[in-house]
Length: 165
Image (cartoon, rainbow, N blue to C red; front, side, top):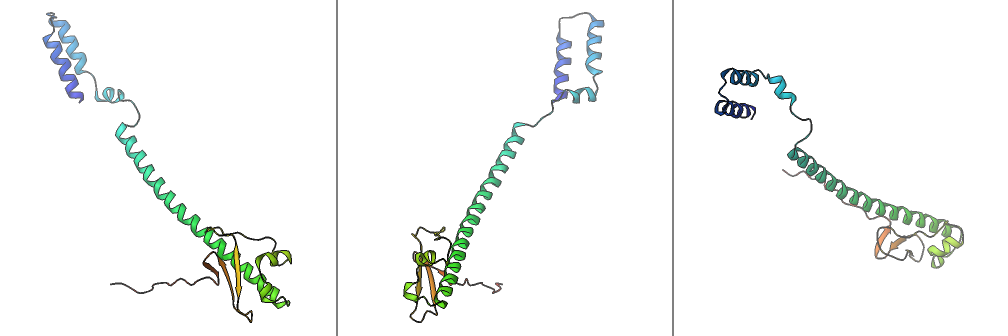
């Protein structure tokens, strides 16, 4: 692009109405004496518009990936909180039954009023009013539910260890 610029300047000098050969030679020599270093110093520092658009696009893609991953982490954390709360409720129910409280009287509210739990936990991962304790007649099997979901004992997840070829 710089060569084109100087070519146009030289052409203008040749076509100029200045008939003085000495003045024409001085102008021509001045244009030719500009070194490459002087040409490079005329560039302004900074980024081009295309470079800025590429950077903004990459940042947008990275941000969208991070938001999706954060949503999954938050959801998993809420489920784990519910499993932990259900486990604490089941432990409190087992202690209460070992101290002679009948299994028919074991509820979350009763565990709180009798001091087995500090407060009544609320489910975080699903919309439910609270946790419900279910026991069989002999009190050996305790199930804690939040809505329709069984939170204790925690359902086992199956891990697929098979190798696909």
